[in-house]
Amino acid sequence: MLRAWDTTFHPEFVAGRAVYLQISELIAAEIRRGRLQPGTALPGTRELAKQLGVNRKTAVLAYEELLAQGWLESQTTRGTFVSSRLPESTPTAFAPAAPGSVAPGFRWQDPFEVEPAPVVVPGALVFNDGTPDARLAPVATLASAYRRVMQGRGRRNQLGYDSPLGSLPLREALSRMLNHDRGLSTTPGSICLTRGTQMALYLTARLLVQPGDVVAVENPGYPPAWQTFRLLGAELAPVPVDEEGLRVDELEALCQRRAVRALYLTPHHQFPTTVTLKAARRVQLLALAARYGVAIIEDDYDHEFHYHYQPMLPLASADPHGVVIYISSLSKLIAPALRVGYVTGPAAFVTALGRLRTLVDRQGDTVLEQAVADLIDEGEIKRHTRRAHAEYHVRRDALAEALRHQLGDLAEFTLPAGGMALWVTFPADVDLERVAEELARRKVIITPGSRYYLAGPGTNAMRMGYAALTPAELAHGVEQLGAVLRQLGS
Ligand SMILES: Cc1ncc(COP(=O)(O)O)c(C=O)c1O
Image 1 (tube, rainbow, N blue to C red):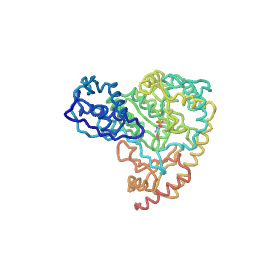
Image 2: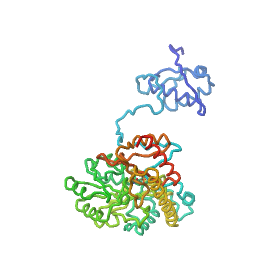
Image 3: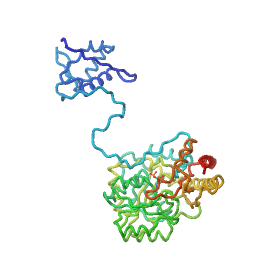
Image 4: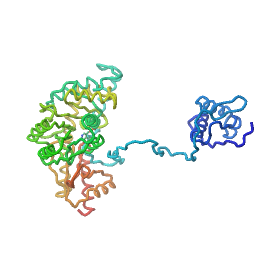
């Protein structure tokens, strides 16, 4: 049949993908964008093959593919046409979209509050906000425990769906650990495993917060928690922190003015200031929460690392009123990449968390969970804790010494009794944003403390994590900090 116009195609074939598929995809794309309307006649296979410089068999295969997918129809003796059953479409200009460049064609909500993850600068020395040294993690024992569970050589081989609360062996092991070491009275049924604190916070907040609810938070405090509450519609109410921890009197004043749904706090080593909430305030806080019906979300993120005396027991260990929801994870104890966290609290609440969890993640990595349970039961986690504890103690002192030696009066801090970071204060005229920029040029990364303030000007300080750096690395980082402060004229 003689056609008025030839339909031509200009493919750019790429290696590694069958040519006939590339041709069929190109023709389908031309139909989708409206260049080839329903009923349009296509060149015969001989002509197409010639035009594209391919074997005729390849052209036949491309048409067969399109016929099978319903883009084309074949009319015996007349030839091959774009299927008349396709809807007509308006041709769009040919602008091959760069990958990822197409704007969403639907309504959606950007969680704009959520800060982007920090940029990783290869080879840089990072004073993070207090993560552990993954180089110390018991990876070999964990890997062999994982392999054992995977191969079904352990006590169980569970590769199927499991309880949404998480694998029972780990809940049992954690329950024993929480009851013996942290003074809680949990059962495996009152623990819900999560992939870290952040997920625990999200699930907890999702059950607690309705849009417009007031959630009290420490100021300064932990922004990822704030962002979670805000995403769910909470109004944040900052409560100041002093050298004894959260100002419970200020919280009380807030409760008198507003209905406070929840309080998020880090009582063991306050984030970022590192202070421990004193005993008297703990007693007042628990009574206050019971009086006003405030849920206390206790984030006990670095419980094990306390250097001078036994770690203070969590608020959850002294909660007769059922007001505390206790959250912790293995991120600080072993390594953040493990993504094993947990929540415990009133049993009915934890059961509901499990139900919510099924919608978010169904369940965690049950193989990993069982492997971690084995490490706890075999005493491996305890051994690691002892090693890491001793090492971080040395590193805390090494950072303190380097700061005193290199910076003298420029850097002020109270040596914290535990944790993985120092909260270091600088004179008001030191511009920490500029210091951070200059240091980044020298491949040393710090985060100015202003980002931890929800309200008010705040202290001119920064949180310097020491656990992930060796004493030599700490000394080098502080030396660079000293050089930048001198360069900027402080
Ligand atoms: C206050 C606080 N809570 C919890 C975590 C741990 O979060 P995750 O368990 O999600 O790794 C961190 C880690 O930086 C933290 O600083």
